[in-house]
Length: 385
Image 1: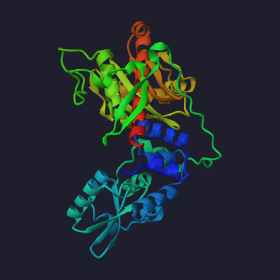
Image 2: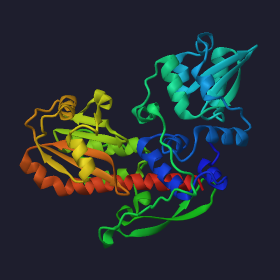
Image 3: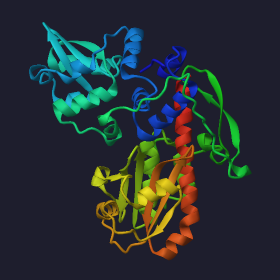
Image 4: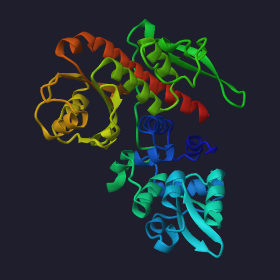
């Protein structure tokens, strides 16, 4: 959506700069829309956000009640595959005009295709993406992404911006080699912006012979995926999934088993898994509850790594089963930390001697992944200014 949502909400006095900062981090790490991030964090009411966007865009809003009570004769006018593709819900039909709830009513490509497929004139309505996610599950059996599971029982509520104080503490540099350096970024409209990036990523955007489309790890035995190449790909990643793909490719090359988890609320969700060089397709179905004993719970709470065989607990056994690992296999589990909070967890398997020898290397790679997330957040902020 071309509308700069964060700037709009700040100008309206509905959120603070600090709240926008935190929501941007959640947007990047968890892969949700900024509006959904703000709602889930409790920084703004769902209805307030939708009404504001409705007024600014000149598009009518659809209520939660209307989305929950769509007649069978209406939602079946649209194929489930198309509803899922564009994240839309038909809500009412009047003559030849079909009203459709969308989180982005400025998506004209979607509107054109919906009109072509249904044969109706499409009247776009605006609705919160979270509500559309729930409606897609209810009417079309589109399983909600795990990123939205935590809000099914109600959203977090926070005090108004004036009453809520958020302290944003920038990460301390580990040494002089990690000092920030100034760079200039040119937006699509030609405007030049100044920002800073971690020193270890200096020059990542101007390396000769590097093509952004060449983000896949080298195949075959001609060239190994080196740490230097991993650093370049981390720095050039354009999405959270690109960061995950870079990391899991390297882990799959270096270790028998590798896995990434996203930590969200009271759970840790499987993000990427690899064993014997083959990605584990069902790994994303894994959901580890942090209220129950597990190695993930320990790492999240202590913010420190764990090394050795896992204790016999139900949650640990889920991890072993998902990765096809024997109970006695030594594992190294490390936290990915941003702003003093564990946002992801990395897991690899090997013999104890190898794990101990490569601990420092993996800690450095985890730090690089955290910086890659930071870079994504910076890029998102640039696009919003």
